[in-house]
Length: 247
Image (tube, rainbow, N blue to C red; front, top):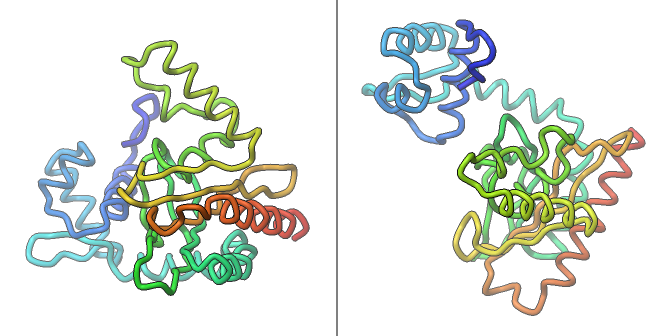
């Protein structure tokens, strides 16, 4: 839900419904949507009626899912996204060199969202599906994104728990600082069991972080290969950053 410090308009409520459907990745009942969005039944049904009329939401047997107009928006994003266009060719090369899956991930409203993915051709492979989102809390992609958010927002999703001790919060901030110095972050099994990943930041003009490049693979397959995979990812991220800075 939008922050309670700002007035909530009908547009906000409609967008909350759309964002919830997009993040869940499955059809949802009205009761599930009420629970997730914290909207009243009458308010939720008003928003759903409008979204259905415009084609943003479909209803089938009492369940709701993103509609065909949402697909048009996604297609328009693919065609217009400067970040995707600049990164895709190098992502394909990295996937071919490493024989593993490579994703392009950005931070939006406290979520790490995959906006492009090149799948490994191996039968056993890992992927953070295009369009999938997870909270900015765990995993290589999330931590790399957090480490490069603007100062005021940096670490907020991780250190905002009032039950956390000062020592824990200091430890989180120290970890994010170390990530910025090293230039990459590695995780193993933090989001999905048995999945190893390495993420490196992507910078645009003025060294502004635009997203992260993440290589992911089954943990059992990368034993002894960590260093070359990290080097490939970091070098590819640097090439993409140069392209972003010059276009």
